[in-house]
Image (cartoon, rainbow over all chains, first blue to last red; front, side):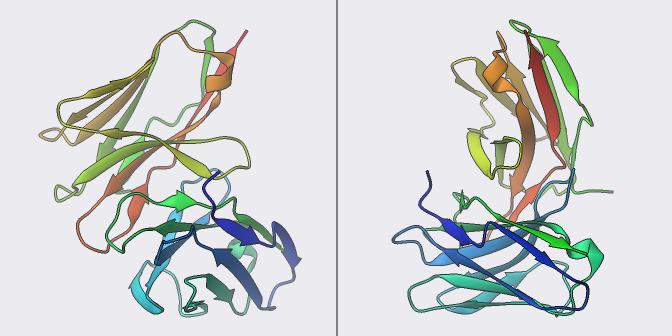
Length: 113
Length: 110
């Protein structure tokens, strides 16, 4: 196992609600990246946090936001949920911000109805 | 056009078969290349990095052709446990993320 944990494992929300997903990075890793994986697709980069600052963002609207805490754990917040937000949300931690070695957590499966 | 394109699959092969996956990438500035494996409803896991000189890990061989912007993965003597989705992944320089292909599903049948 990678040592990256995510919670919750599954979540069901209704359209228009807000959701917060959590990730604890592997010990010693200061960078967390979040990905969205829709059914049948590869993971798509949402954003990355390095030392509590956003450090890169993919093509996702502002209603996707995040935080990183001093212990390097991270949250992904999604406001005004849409049906298309239903996906597996993966976080990955890495030792430094420009490292290609990313260790993925088990993901949170979000269903929006 | 997607930045990373893979064979659409699925591939259904008998045990013991050799199977090859192909992948192309569009960004010539890409610097690092990987194959990840993802089991059903699980997270992606790094299978192997891909180097210009080619690299082998047991039954798995990865090749990179920078001129053609092409990456391949060859699996020899397929096992039932090889059944998974194989993701082609490209990394750029700096703080940019990994870019994943859509994945190719492999089913190895007894």
